[in-house]
Image (cartoon, rainbow, N blue to C red; front, side, top):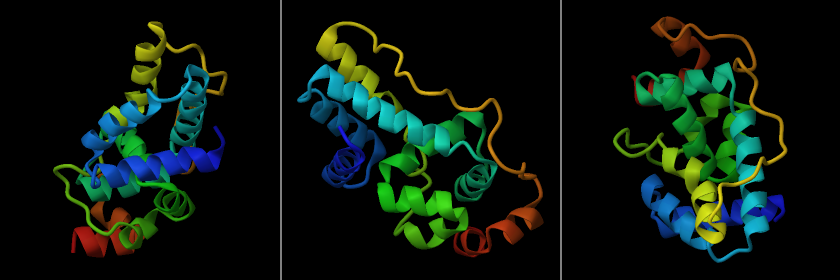
Length: 172
């Protein structure tokens, strides 16, 4: 599975689920079950590599604004959700986290921002296909600390300065 096929699978499952991340995870598992186990592992490698790339302080700050706070776990689930939004939103957010204000059509705190189940979809499909737990993917683990400069999430003035568009749209 190449990168284009990965993103096509993400996009088609998001569209089929009408944007609901939990439903998207269910659809994704179903679609992955149609593939050979090695392709499911390829998908998992693509997902994990992007998940690790998104482990950044500036993106965590954007998640903090969107979610009105984001613990370690909430940020993990946010990164899964962000991947589930597709290539344009994901890459746009990595390029400029404040651009999420323009990239997201709608954002409902009740369902958006939490894609925990998306993070488990490949593991679940692989286990159903093979009866075994997925093997080591052979990619470098995420760094111990987020990349970049730490952000003081507790200071609203700092967040408003770093993310002016997000702040205006979601806090203003």
